[in-house]
Structures are given as structure tokens and as C-alpha cells.
Length: 120
Ligand code: 5GP
Image 1 (cartoon, protein in one colour):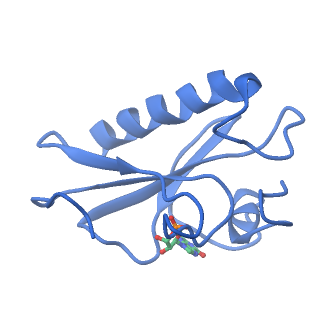
Image 2 (image 1 turned 30 degrees about the vertical axis):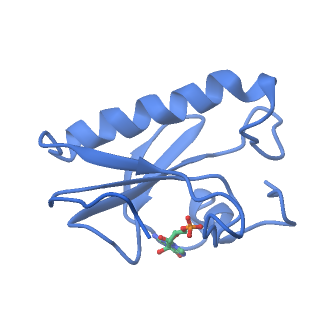
């Protein structure tokens, strides 16, 4: 799918299995895989697959409300699967000032060590 700042991203190639990733959860609408540059002992991403006609998934579009909820639900489900019973963090980096580098919506889930707050 196209992202907010242009065309396909590396995540589209992960969805289509054109490039490998360590996939830890998959369903019709979402995919979870390990981050290639983990910032914690457990660090995975949950992304929408952009099926059902969506060309992008925006956090500000009402019609995406259900799928956005699903992504958060899957984040928690996979966190449990990954053994993050002591806690974890869910992050969305949005836009330039939010340090987004891949323009395909994704949730970061990090855990497995004591995290600190606030972030930089
Ligand atoms: P952002 O800064 O956009 O929130 O985070 C993008 C994340 O995607 C980064 O944590 C980065 O390590 C991860 N990432 C970028 N390219 C790849 C890739 O090809 N495979 C995987 N598994 N993760 C990637």
C-alpha cells in the first residue's frame, strides 16, 4: 500500500514476503515481526497489511477505527506470547519530529528489560 509520504515502503516487501523478516504473528489484516535493529531484548513491530481496499491506514480517519483497534489488540496478544509479563511499551513514531523513518504505520512493542521514561 501507499504510505502518507509516497509509495511502497520496505514493509510492503515484508508483507508480500519479497524480503525476509522474522514474522511472529500474522492474520488477514495485520503482521507482527521482529525489528531488525532491536532497542530492547524483545522489540517487534505490528503493521496493517492494507487488505480490504485500503491504500493507506491513517490514524485520523474514522473508517480506520476498527483496524486501529485491532492493531493494538494484536500488540498486547503478541506481547503476552513473547512473555512480556513484567510490562512493555507501545510506541508510534509519527512524522519527522516523531522520528518516523518508515512511512507505513507501525506500532513498536518493546520489553524484556527495565525501560526508562521520558524518552529523549
Ligand atoms: P520508525 O523510526 O519509522 O518508527 O521505525 C522503523 C523501524 O523499522 C525501525 O525500528 C527499524 O529498525 C525497523 N526496520 C527498518 N527496516 C527494516 C527491515 O527491513 N526489517 C525489519 N525487520 N525491521 C526494519
